[in-house]
Length: 420
Picture 1: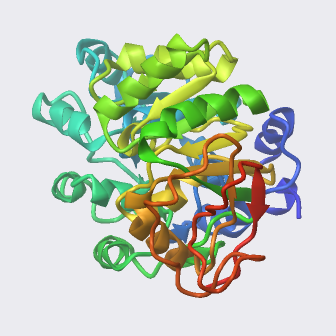
Picture 2: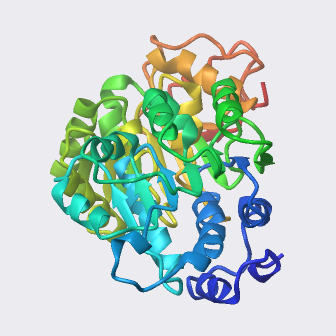
Picture 3: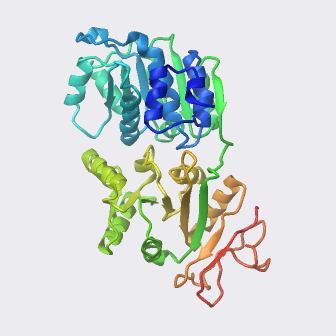
């Protein structure tokens, strides 16, 4: 299948080709015809599967009938509202709208918190057809009467599952009350949780359901590996692996903002250019950090789950779980940052004894055990080992063995555990 078989206009197909894409991803192939036909859509697709283009391209095609070059703001009412959970994702969706829409004279704008509101007010008053927004900042504009949503024709909820996780449901419901009852609704989510299905039932009208990845699965293109290690040696092991393997563009996850800052400082002092990104950093600081990471000026980006949500970095080769997340589902979100659009990537987890239950939870969700290896010089303390994992020992180990290797030698060993 190619893009020109999906019903898109020739100029958009040409722009997609100029951007280097020849074949649509599964979610694009499934969703684009439904969006073009004006249907409501409920789509579940893993992060990095091309879901932004799956709604941006057909929306541009549907709205081209309204395109005009008039200077009158009244000729440019908000016709599409795209709600996203984070500032980073807002910027990236807006960038996609501008990239793919360069042949369609529609005005896009993006509004999010963390920066002054006055420039956004000025842009909105000039008239925009496609508005990308985070819920909180959009409601700020509603309160100041600087945005009118009475002519919205298409509503998009992107990464709806994360918006629910972040507590945006009341804001979303307030915003929906401001929209025309008759409109097209598109909801994109990494998973079809029960909460997502309830929300979709209250918003979508007879939606076409698109599900291109099995529920609670990680991309097959991501190579997963666990390094057992004592907690107080995690920083040293991470620095060792980055230097030894000459990793570039490494996205590292921590659970807390202070943990992210400390780890970035540790790595930076050892000559591995690193910076932390989290909600305590100002928006300009976060933007500069992300750009430096993309260009290679920064080698390691240390992030919390909230800060990393929506980060879109092409060809990201390495994701590291410095700490496993409290929620197993967040593990899938994290490692979904790599191995995108057919590329391969590595997802490494540094696991200490106190995280054994979290690892079990991840493996239950994945319905398989994750391969592990012990790095030379970083063998965990054999007197502080977790209990055996259910479902069998790693290959080559006795059945009574622990998940962590504990031979006295320090040679690096790699094993693949059987499916549990």
